[in-house]
Amino acid sequence: MKTLNALLGAVAALSLFAASANAQTYPERSITMVVPFSAGGPTDTVARLVAESMSKDLGQQIIVENVGGAGGTLGAGRVAQADPDGYTVLLHHIGMATSATLYRKLAYDTLNAFEYVGLVTEVPMTIVARKDLEPADLKGLVEYAKANKDTVTVANAGIGAASHLCGMMFMSAIETPLTTVPYKGTGPAMTDLLGGQVDIMCDQTTNTAKQIQGGTIKAYAVTSPERLKVFPDLPTTTEAGLPNLQVGIWHGVYTPKGTPADVNERLSKSLQVALKDPNVVARFGELGTLPSSEADATPAALKAKLEGEITRWKPVIEAAGQYAD
Ligand code: ASP
Image 1 (cartoon, rainbow, N blue to C red):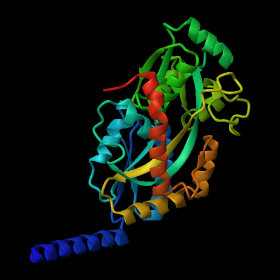
Image 2 (image 1 turned 120 degrees about the horizontal axis):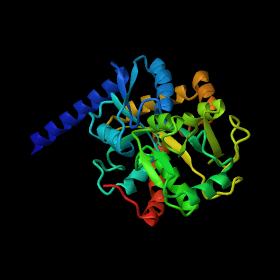
Image 3 (image 1 turned 180 degrees about the horizontal axis):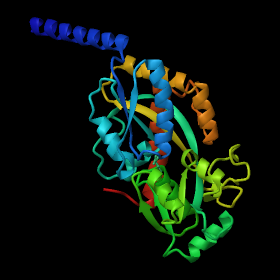
Image 4 (image 1 turned 120 degrees about the vertical axis):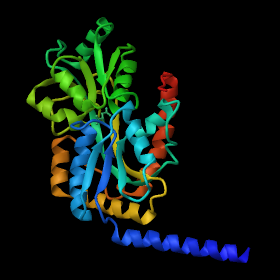
């Protein structure tokens, strides 16, 4: 028994040594950042900006890999199963919290399958439509949607996506169910909105800002409590008559469960550097969002956020009674 204990002690000491030796030299090769939505969409845009800046700080390339589908749960599942060595990370949004209740069967246990790096940003949503949709304002859009409820289509990035959540909030606010059209991300959904194949979408400013400013889509309202500097003329949902439709899409970086704490800390420090990078700050500003504070870009803040948001959204989703398998 004594020998066994001594042996176990030696193994534990060795693995501790290995973990800290890893952290001192980490990273020694490129890191994969999984984005659980299509390339060219809002999450991808945020990820690529942050990854580029973190790569400089870490001295190794962070390669973004898009694993879209099932509202972000496929990509999250992929990271849950990856080696916990710091070379696979996940950048996901609020869907990490809502999918924990929305999906009856998830391939991973949300609160036990990941370690935390930190919060990245919180992005407002915008209610937008194809350019030639008739209504001129949100009130008109609500009347139009009610009058044409059998034909109006709402694009989203699948159950668990931010666009799905916001679309559901819109339908619930106007008490009218509409036909939803799922994509692997709102990047391709935007292409169809521009082409006039779908009518409405509620999507993050990180995907809509350029189109709104270019006049290629119609914008009705922003879901933040205040108007945004990037579109000062766009009313908030509260001003435009739907005060219950307020939501911010927070993003976080995760690693697989078992990733050494000092590796997560290293990633977190790098995330903090990226969020102060003048280029990142400027681009975020143009896209209608702000970088998270240094205190929020930490493992503890992201853990608390995820836990709080799972608790916050659970009763809302249960009341809506719509689940995915
Ligand atoms: N974040 C998704 C994307 O990047 C869209 C969504 O969640 O609605 O495509």
